[in-house]
Image (cartoon, rainbow, N blue to C red; front, side, top):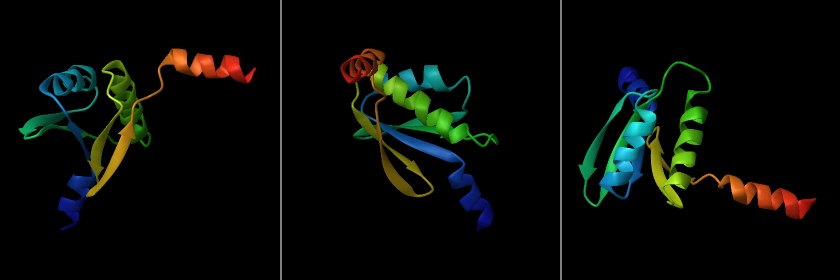
Length: 104
């Protein structure tokens, strides 16, 4: 049982709305994170296996947020350890810069 739980916690599963989004995730994330993708109507599932580095999950989620922003997707659901979470897109650089200008 512990071995199965360990395997589940080592995988982040993203729910993507289109095949094109799944392909973009594959191109951008596969060089660093192994995994698989699957058509599971009405969404595409994209899995990324976490490595042993302590910050691997944070790096993966930041990269996924940046990709969501590039794809103009506001948010997606991802699953980790049997729980579902909402992942928002990263703010585009121009939005962050505009906020800094207003605050100054």
